Image (tube, rainbow, N blue to C red; front, side):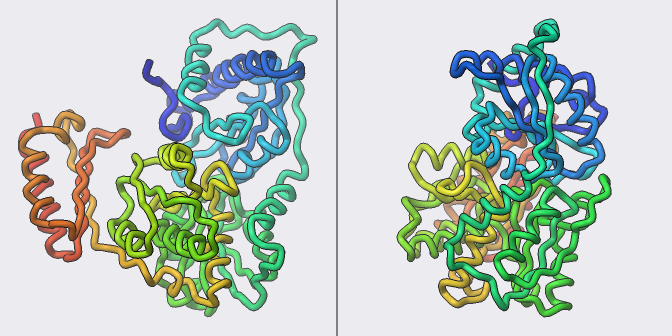
Length: 451
């Protein structure tokens, strides 16, 4: 059975358009409440309990209230956390012994989008079968439990403090950032009140931008998807480095003191090499089909195994669990340290990079210097049937010809988008001119026979 509403990262869309509407999310809260209440009754003799956190979008107030109503009407008690990073909700769901956690966020998207993400009792994203069970419950008649079985609602006032202490505990007791000048860009999102405090309590001198959310400015020209403001601030104030987070705090991009952007692939490389040197890597590294070929080459040179998963942090996590490995990530900055957290956590990942710098007495640029990013071109070709076109014989023949010509110097990936009617054409190689020429030819082939 295929999922109707859940994608790779929960349910997401434009606010006011189905399914991100008050009516649907009320039913979603009720359906999820029914499912988790049933499971709670099987596993333990206690009242079911679910946490709700959100980012700083204006629509979060609306969605929070209807989800709360739906859950309470299904007999589930709710604890509200207000604006909190996605990984904080995963962590607190686990440590507060809740049955599930819900995050209201559309991550790096603009304010007019929003979404609903779920975590299970262990802080993991829901397995397919549980998402399908919630979807099946959505088709049932919505019936409120008796008044004596209604859930209650309360607010967790110390959620931020708990998460800040957790983040600090992911590095050694003697770890200090004394004398380091760091600029942090919180994307006007859910980390605005926690990320600066974590760094300050570790003795860094912190300058903060993107920490004045108004409900509309989340990810707007700031954060990990738009690091230009961070670059300017780092260079103008002579900082050692900059840290850019996204709206819900699960993506990390960093900027060296000279203004050079360091992406997720490079950060994963830095963490992997430091962990290998300290004996804490435990296996290899998981990337995705979109990870730069330079990461694969650099890890191979360092004697570190590398595996590519499908695009999406849930697939990175799945591959890590299958292999018993701890470290994985995406170019976008989703970095998972599975021995420390159950999901991508930008603050935790940043601390891992800072520890690699400190232990080696090196700058950010120096800890990533062993990896050379290869030139990469990504083009979208709009077609009516992306899956069929991506696997067409003429497309595969053209790809094979160029793969043979590249002979280990690069990589080609042709894949249908899962969210729009396009085929994505990605080419990497050691020559930018050659990469552009191959991409142009493949784009022409993919688009030549569409109807």
